[in-house]
Length: 422
Image (cartoon, rainbow, N blue to C red; front, side):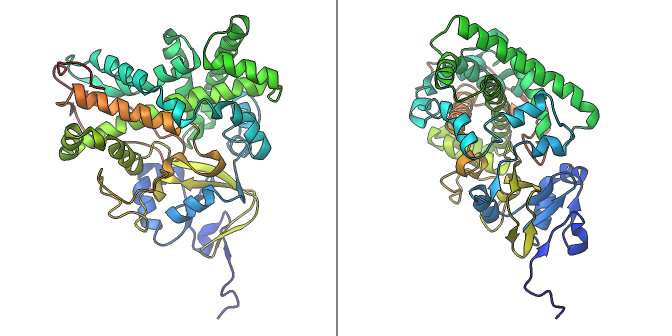
């Protein structure tokens, strides 16, 4: 006995001295699943050279998503990354995703009705028709990049139609959104910040331009309604009004384009499961859910602890950035049978999918994302049953934030004839 038995072991930044490894971004980026698989049975948390802590186990991640002692990061993340001001900083300071308490509720409430499940379901026929149209544009052309020609365009067109943005603007705002979202990863260098800031300024200016147009000539669209209600209520500052739309464009375009491509790649890599879903469209929601589990498009959720929190004898220190690793939790052997096996018929996924977060910050666009993924996959199964990978299986990169996929090369023959199925 050394007098320390039963006492929590503080996981300070020199955690290796206390048996807690502090891993580099390079180590985590090289093989995140392998790193998590190695450490998860041994420790509930590992150190991160930038973020401080990575929580690994499914039960801990699920509980901490809803634990009032953990809060959204507000401006801690950009400050940690050397971004003390500017538009990138404002996206964290004035957005709903990183706010807490009454401020979070005030910023989020104008959108809760719009994204209610019942209302979003009404968009399904439109999204289905858009997916069919987009697929028919390239079927029969030989090898294509499915991300560029298809999975990126479904959410971009959906968010454009929802907000009332001109479809001709899609290349402009998606390019900026993809660039700005790089700030959520740990792979950018200080030298990259000016380019990220320039993209953030350009996206902010684009939103200001669109909002000014709605003030001058309101339309029957979400932006006009949001603007009218926000200004009538007087609860949001002009800056907050702009930043909520900036965040919506980023969140509504980037994560689903990656997830849409990954689910197709995984099914094509498992031909029996691709064929099973093709025969039975009722399996599509399960295929989407399993793809999101096996390779989530969001690798982690950032939080900060208000108080010290003990996990299996180790302390998550108050005031430090903490990453709740969805990637690790969704492959946890204690939560899922054969977690490294892709199986669309698995029965152990919880009713509320962990990839969409939990508690007050559960993803407001969850229902819309599911519809986009289901209808995007459904159109391919109906129209291109002979779709195949053209080259190696792509690698989804990243261990945190919005993960990255450079492209997905596929090929298909002619479109299946006949009417579009309802």
